[in-house]
Length: 129
Image 1 (cartoon, one colour):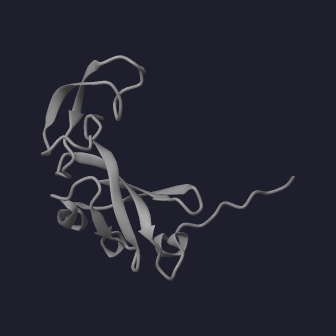
Image 2 (cartoon, rainbow, N blue to C red):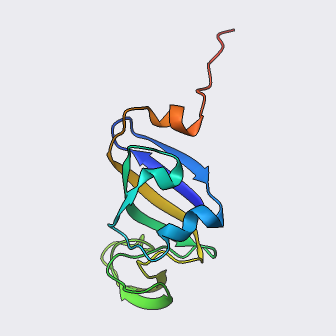
Image 3 (tube, one colour):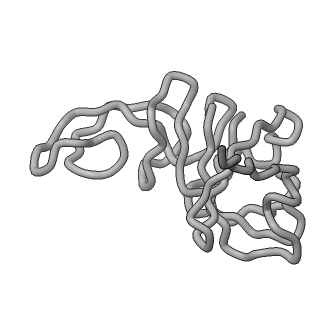
């Protein structure tokens, strides 16, 4: 499962890949639930689940209970681009399951170390030639 971590303070996002063993404690959580960052290697951080998409690209939708897919008549939110029109779109429920390929989270509480340091991400230095 890919996890995209959004950092509201810096405006950047970081993508990491976690294996199924690390993802098992996340299964069953819903959009809006708080998650301990230690599960993803971010000790001291608290993260909030904001959404995601399944293996076929269908977005998770808050308010649609369960983890299955369903076609809904919706006018706004994930999966809709046309304004003012109601469209029938297939969306996935708000519960995290094994079928989720990408999970989006944002930082709620920061830890003592920087995210880049904990994830082992190095910044690319621009060379002036």
